[in-house]
Structures are given as C-alpha cells and as structure tokens.
Amino acid sequence: MRLAISLIIAGALVSVSCTPKVDLTKGLQVVDVSTGWADIGVINGQNKLVPSVAFKFKNVGDQLLSTLQANVVFRRVNEDKEWGSMFVRISGAEGLAPGATSEAQRVDSQLGYTGTEPRQQMLDNTQFVDAKVQIFAKYSSTQWQLVGESVVERRLLAK
Image 1 (tube, helix red, strand yellow):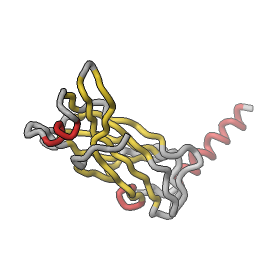
Image 2: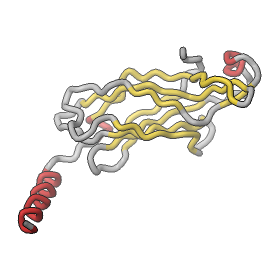
Image 3: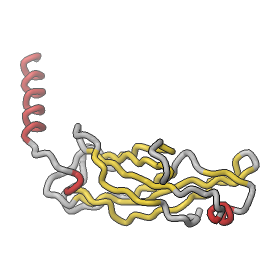
C-alpha cells in the first residue's frame, strides 16, 4: 500500500515538474478592465466611496493554467503603502484553457473615503487623492507576477 502511494506521489511530482512554466506577463492578459469608485453606502452617518476594479483574464499562451488566482492591490497614487487588497480564485483544478477568458471579477477595496458632502462632490474635492490598482496573478505553485496596473478612474460606479 505504501509503495502504491509513493508511486502515485512520485508520478504527480514528475508530471508537475515536466510541465513548462508559463511567464504570466506574456501568457496572460488582463482584459475588459473597468475602474471607478464604488458607493458602499452610509457608514457612521457619512457617505463612503472605495476604489473598485472589474476585469477578466485571457489565457493567450498554449498551456492550461490550473488553480489560477489573482491578488488585487489598491494604493493611493502618491504612496507605496497598500490601501486594500483581495485574493480572487479565478479557476480551480479545471484551469483556464489556452485561448479562454475567465468570468468577470469585481474587487472593491476595503478602505476609501468618507464625507458628508454628496458623492460626486467628494470626487471633485481638491483634497481627493486618486488611487491605483495592481493585479498580480499566479497559477499552480508558481510565484506572483504583476500582470496589470491602472489608475482608478475618478467616476462613480452604478450600484
């Protein structure tokens, strides 16, 4: 029994190690990107806006990307400090096939701006600091790679 399990594990390791690694900066595209500021309602009597991004991944390579994940990171444009992030599961073991496009993903930051003025006035305020979003991807046991980044458009998103 132990021998059978050892052979199965060894076979799995060999098949994984024989699969060519995909450089996601070349084999994966971030498509249909849309950014803006999501109105998440009234918090403690103040309007709250958070940066938001919607996107899809397109596999432009020739390899199946199994267990594909995204890590979406928001930052203010004048800071390196993270302002919110979220991990997103794009595909499981079934993977994202060559030529295929994932389902749309929408990610809102946990942090944003609050104020008593109307939401559009918050965006027009001279003290308003824009945000940027960076999208990292990885599949299987590979390392995270930056595959897309954008400044968050200064516009309100429909609820």
